[in-house]
Image (cartoon, rainbow, N blue to C red):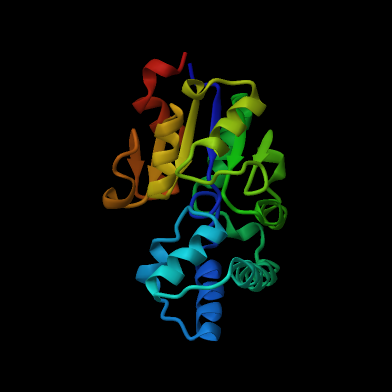
Length: 220
C-alpha cells in the first residue's frame, strides 16, 4: 500500500528553471561558451557539477577540477541571489492543494531533490510544514539517475520503495525512481517523462483523486 510521497523540487513544487537558466547563461557568457535553452534542457534533474560538465562537453572545453568547482560555485552564487525574489506565490498551480490533501490524509511526505539550495527554496515558499523529510543535494553522494536520494527519503520515512510514489519532471528522475523500485509520476511531456507509471502535463492535473484512481489497487 502507498504510505508515502516523494517530490522533486524544481519543476514539480516550484519552477526555478528560469532562474537556473539565467544563472548558467550568465556564467557561460563570462566563459565565452555557447549556451541556449536546448542545452539547458539537458541539465534538468542533474547536479551542479554534472551540469557544468555537460556545458563543457558541448563547448569542447577542458578545465582543471579546481576551476570547474570555482565556476560551479560562481553559478550557485548567482542562482542563490536570485532566490530572494521567490515568495509563497511561486508554488506551481495545484501543488499547495495536493500537499495539503496529503497532510490531511496522513501520508508521509519527503523532498527528493538534487538541489543543494532546497532548504532555502522551501523557506522562501514557506513549505517546510508539508515535509517530514528533506532530501537534497547534501544528503547523498550519487545524484540522479542513481536512486539514492529517493532511497534516502523512503528510509527516513521508515518506508519501502514500493510503498512510495515519486513525482518527477526529469527523464533522469524517472530513471532514478524506476532503478530504486518506486512507483513514479512524470510531470511534463511524453518525450521526457513518458516512461513513468503515470504522466500528467502539469501538477495542476495531478490531483490526489487522479493519482488514487490510477493506483487504486495500492490505496486502501
